[in-house]
Image (cartoon, rainbow, N blue to C red; front, side, top):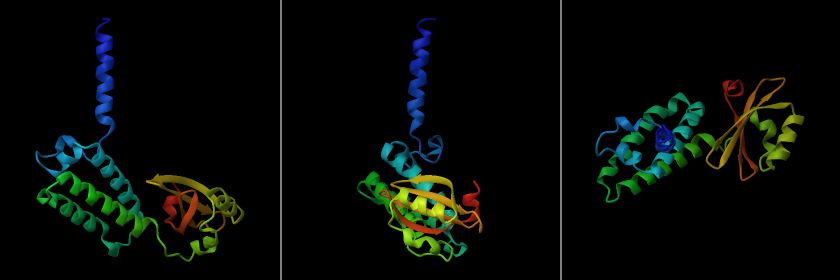
Length: 188
């Protein structure tokens, strides 16, 4: 019995470590020699896959139907899978992930365009996070939730009277952008 307990503990720790770093998909279903198999064998690629999955899910909330974001993502996966032709497949896949993450963040999550509703608070873009939060409260906005993606935080505020929802991107401790957000983002 004394021997079984340490073996059980070692087994439990090993299995926890084994599953601690997983990509957004099931590695057990990866085909031999596939891009997915390479991703499952690299901590860096598994991290990038999870990061892209998170960015993509958030980007879908802000994409227009005409953007066809799902079709675009499927096309990106096909392009990523073309890395089998590269001399260094792993490096090629890493570059593809980094490019797609940057593309989605720039196109959907760090919008430079301002919307009609968010325009009433554009004057605080560039403010320190804590200062901006005080100004938003004075203007009738209530904090609803915050989500961290990469080096940015996305905080959702709902206006008490109009019920409009805005998304504030904070980067390096300062408000980087303020845009309208779907009402559902403030109701979670």
